[in-house]
Image 1 (tube, rainbow, N blue to C red):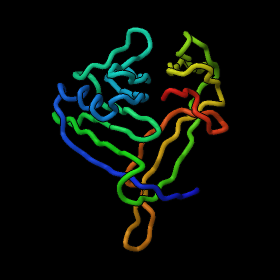
Image 2: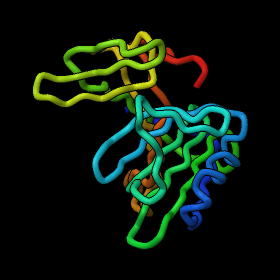
Image 3: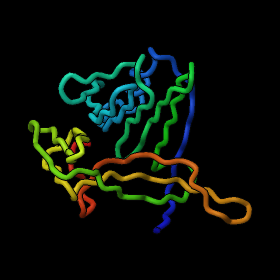
Image 4: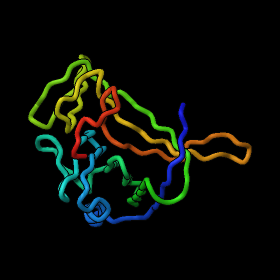
Length: 182
């Protein structure tokens, strides 16, 4: 495990359903990002570009149905979760703020086969019936990873604790971005 130190900020606030898209647009402005949503019936991965959320086929973002939403790129992530009647947003932005120890982790996207669905969408699937559609061209099974950044704090006794984590993007085995515009 390689621990490094970066500058980072963290902000948390409560949102209404109507504030979700304007909040994301305000944070990312003219930057592109991936988006991961958990709903009551699906897990979808897409992208946010020019203020528009795009998922494969007929999938949509529904502020009434989502459980968990992550919008992320290499620089930052806004993580929006529904907790009972509240909607809580956490913004983690790297490159400014306080020195914080981190640990970056590469996690392989599971799949036994891949199928290019269109110029920018690839489906990974497993024999047991699970499939995941990614907004990636040229993504390959056994060569597609997502990067999770873990933020570390220490107890007064010096014990290491993971206090926060965020997603950063999709990469190949060599650590290169699979999609250069995000």
